[in-house]
Image (cartoon, rainbow, N blue to C red; front, side, top):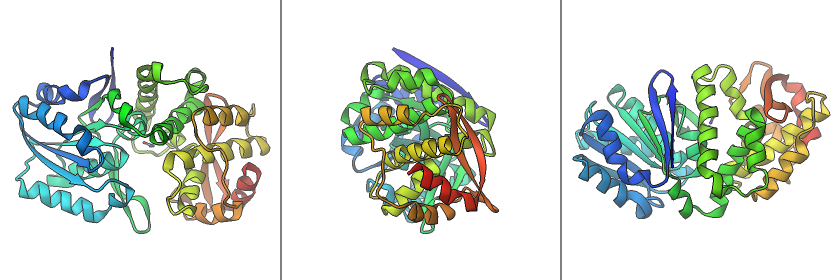
Length: 351
Ligand code: GLY
């Protein structure tokens, strides 16, 4: 089985969702660009699993390859690793006709994409996501970035890939907790846009439908990216659970993984929205049930005050307001600009 979603943004590209497609990545790229040099960027966790397969697929399609492997983890997504990658590309005499291939999860895609965006003012870029989170969210839509000491994703660019290949065979080697993190984003798409998707995943029995689930999430992401590529309005709906989720992440010094923090953030936002009378129906119990069935947390030990302090520094703050995403009903979220003074009460009623 295979599905293709076409994204028409500032760059137009296909997202192909297909079991085993990684092995034909070279042929797929050749059909788009002809042969050139492929810089394969990956981390030291993914490299032993898939680097050989991907490299062989490119070399047997006639590509020259160079591989850049960095230490796994968010701590690598910084200016220093980015600089090393850019120097590596320069040393390997990469030109504008060559391609950067991001093989891995969100960290790899974000950093390799930013390198592709700035090297020689922009070279071709292909994403081969290997985590569920990267397949359903971060590999599509062109957000690329690295973290700064002051916060996550503070230096980056909107830069659309030329092709995204989602090989869901790769999900078999994911740790269950990492798979669950991706499910937090899937549940997020369901709550924001699609009750049917939410119902499909709420019992946690998702493996048999994984191609359908990834495809639906990519379609929903495509719709929102085509409507608001540069994140000025509708795309901000994708931040459901993220504003307070980021605060949970930061309070835990990033000990709580992103997907788990988003899960907690969604519960707080849904419960608070209901308490504030902003929801037509209270979705909190349904969200909690879906999260629990997908092995995700629903509570935090941090106090409302702790989360509020961190939320105030969130980059989504604009003037005296913070944009929060809240569910009106299952499958429909809206953006609310909330005065900063109200945010503490909001978090208190959601916790
Ligand atoms: N991950 C949220 C976005 O791409 O806008």
